[in-house]
Amino acid sequence: MTDSHDDASGRAVAPASRRRFLALGGASLATALTGCSGVLNNDGGSSSGAVSLADFRGSGPLVEQRESPSGTSIEDLPDLEGELTLYLGGGEGGLYLDLIELLERKYENFSASHRLEPSSDLANTIIEEYEADATQADVFMAVDAGSLGAVANAGATAPLPEEALSAVPDDFQDGQGRWVGIAGRARSIPYNTDQFSASEIPSTVQQFPETAALQGTVGWAPTYSAFQSFVTAMRLLRGDDETRTWLQAMLDHGITEYNNEFVVSNTVADGTIGAGFANHYYALRVQSGRPDAPIALAFTEGDAGALVNVSGLEIVQGTDNSELAANFVRHVLSAEAQEFFATRTFAYPMIPGVAPVGDLPRIDELNPPDIDLTELADVSGTVDLMRDAGVL
Image (tube, rainbow, N blue to C red; front, side, top):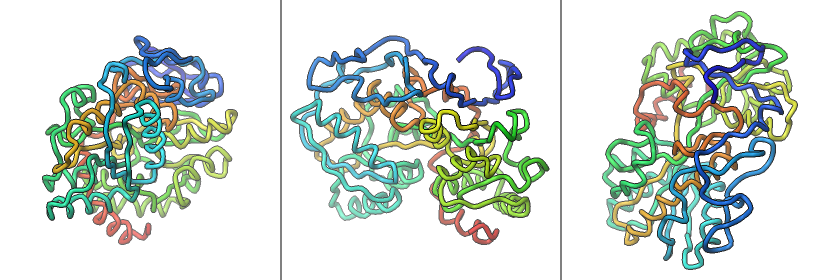
């Protein structure tokens, strides 16, 4: 990223500001983001198997002219050998399967069986199996830190390899070597650039009910798990009473409800609403299919609206495949796998040698709140509060 940049209205944003905006114009999306050094050639060049960097990387204007990432390459890791049992939690689990298939293609002596269910359900299953001394899974991959934390707090995790932990910023692991993030998602404000300039989007979510220009033109998806994690973060930061008051104020302000945050972002691009609350990658997915859509992203500062949550993994205590599981963890945090998450899912990569797509600010340029991500596990309390506030 440069030291300063222009917002959607053309005004320069000073480098001293932590506020970040992303204008999703077609030209900017085609701009290359470079890594520090190459690990594989884009046109092939892996030393074993029929898999190259190009297989891990997505396609389209978001990744055009993108240079090779840096970091530990799978070429520098021991081969994956043996059979692994994976519990895959959450709606992104199908994307994990694409990555696992690539690893199976590369390593002919490696295979992975899986169980795909909601993260919270699998977390409970792992805990029950551990307590009954009947562990089935080798690795748990989940879309939220709360489920990972629940398993870790039950003592059902084994230590992760130091080589994996040292590659990921401290904010995106639990600090005790029990779980580590593999892909990040930032809360953001998608807004319609025909209706608003970047400077008109509030810098905190607390200001939204007080902003007259946004009345009746904001959307959210309150039944969506990512939104409920955002509300949980607000409860941690501001308490239940203030969170309830904010939710009720947004209802009074004329908020529109949608089923999911991709629909929120699409509706912003359509101009039906002017702005919304959504994970950052939904606007990018809209733009990848509609390059000329008038949509951009704003990021709030230091509040629940700036939450960066992670998908992550942990090794399950009681596994008979601890060496293979540890090697698998290192592969998921390799430069190639992190390029997969960045360019196939538009998530934030967890290692510094892999850039996010397009003009997204790097993850260390965001200003998330200072909270322990494992505390986001109290979703039931959030649902109760949202019902009490009349949101659900």
